[in-house]
Length: 87
Length: 264
Length: 262
Image (tube, rainbow over the protein chains, first blue to last red):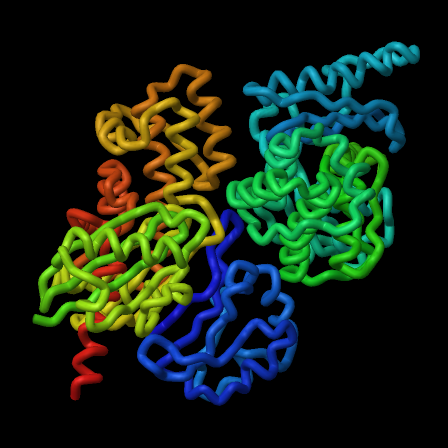
């Protein structure tokens, strides 16, 4: 399944998009995140995949944009293109 | 050469009169429902203060008028209209020639503008659809807390421990503030928490365009020293604030008017 | 006879539903209040009383919702997204796109024929398009909340509300009221602003028929019609749109029980 973590408000749409079918739970993205907003956990069907921690879902638009300028970020280190930004 | 810049914001209209590139008069009024009339009145008020000093200038005798702000298209008597992004950039650079990032927090909008070394606009992001991050956010929460908006800054400086507000949305933040008030959290701590909240939102926008020093904060909310401090803490850099920060847009418009007349 | 239950502890209301084989035996809805654990026991008891059963009769309980981890008698907990999809497909087997407009959040879910979630997005950061928005509008316009939908349908010339933001919209509404604009026209304008907002959320997950709207706001016929217009599909609406999550949880409970028995 595809999960959009984040929100839309007056200034735009800010979502971190995870494709749990493509995610193999390797954890590379969790390690590389400089703000520690990701974690691995079993989803509703028992598969261990990456998710955004509850306390950060509503701050995606404030925390993640700075990473667009980093060479190593969650979207880049994933080998299966399971995680990406909406903007 | 005597020119005028007028900035029609959603809450206030600001006018700046330049004579030979020097600011000689300014005025600030409530916009109300009729932008064109408010713009005229604002300019006339500024011109009146000139008359009191012996300079007699009428609206018609102004060499050039540039309008900016959300209501600029309604100012039909202006010679030209320019975007607020452009005017903010020109105005801020005039006061602080080294500025590369301009943050403008107004009554109902907020924007972050990044400038090149030469002062040209390279990138910007703006929000005028969501109350959080704007003066409105502070207005609503100040009302709930029961203090005047102009007192927020000085009160927040006494805070020992800012109360954490997890919602960015004004409506949800209001509920959190009410709950803190019921729990008798000291109001200076609540206010500091509110300032942190708005600083978080602005910092996010700054990250989106990328931050280059020096950084300036303009717009009405820049008069709130608590917000300035909270933003400095978030960014980790000191922030330049001009005198009369809400006039920067109108100043920029007036400078553009002066250029149009050939008095560069 | 297989008896299972689903308990949905939301941020504003708590729901419990008892399933007997594949039929809804009883359900209850109460405000969540401050103590989610106590509320879960209370709402379960009310449902049990209605069904004339005791907790020991229930073979498996699944909890869901914001407070799902504090339900002491639950065997398992599952997110409300999956439960919502499961419940909606049970009520409307052809549904593939669900819009849930709750008290403080808004969700868009796309699912397959078995109720498995394919794509999901939620917005609980912004009050625009949530129950909160309508509560505040009703207060501002001095109208009863339940009348907003019906009245908006009588609009002759919808006012333009440029913002879905509650704070800005409220300001615009006050200006319109001052100018003497008819309340029905203002309501139509508000519905348009909200519909645009939720339509963006739906586009994010993709829209496939059939389309259902759940949650408290499904009861506002004005908003429903506007959303239908944007989506281009008729919306399926459950008779009791608030229990869809608890129903889904109960269905998951049934599945889990069958697994255990194998």
